[in-house]
Image 1: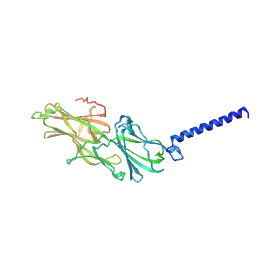
Image 2 (image 1 turned 90 degrees about the horizontal axis):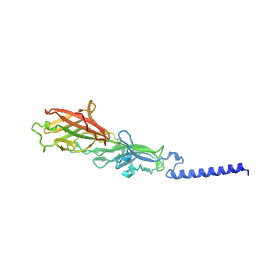
Image 3 (image 1 turned 30 degrees about the horizontal axis):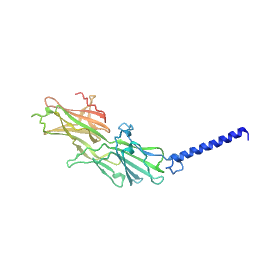
Image 4 (image 1 turned 90 degrees about the vertical axis):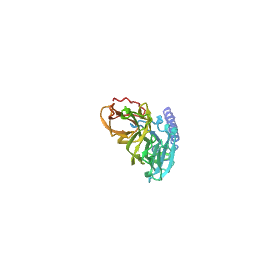
Length: 309
């Protein structure tokens, strides 16, 4: 055998060995896939985003999630509890169902008991409702996140590509406070007297699509005295709402606000936005006249209470 033939034989042997090693490595990586077309077998994970769509999974704003697995006819097949480590680590959600099974998955983040979860055997009946008292005053919910997706099973994974159930924020927060409240008391401020804040005109239920529905309710955010002003004790989570009415009850008087003034001088209604903090400040003049409200909206985690009076 001449030298050229020897070199060609050696190249052929090396090429076959390299190909065998590559196929072996691919088989190990895709051991969970049973379909011959391995390119169609991928994993499914959970991702948490903020109101702008940024990935914030690592920030642990969702510390637990509940996953509901439905078949193509919306029949409940399974529910799973996903813990903080699973979520933060973007662990693979395994789907041990027959090949080519079509599934609809719904995930709720931070269902920690402050609202009522209505579970049933049908996806359409899944709902997360606010808890309310006899006067339809709603309890502040948890910081809720929602996501859903349709997938097709391939082995233990899903078809098409690596996919994610994207959990989006479904609540915002409100803080309320007063300025010059003492002038609202014609007989003088009495430190033992309590006031009440209210937020009205928001629906009480989110359905299986994460959409607001149900009945209109009001919130009575927890508050207390701070010096001579009445303030909420911290951020109060609320379902999202537009054109809401904020009000404060001072003794027998009620001061409602449907529109307030923003930082840029524009006026508009009170709204609760996902993953954002709405600050509402009620203001009185020294003559006791109610001057309305100032409104400031900032992202969660941004403390900026600087309002030009």
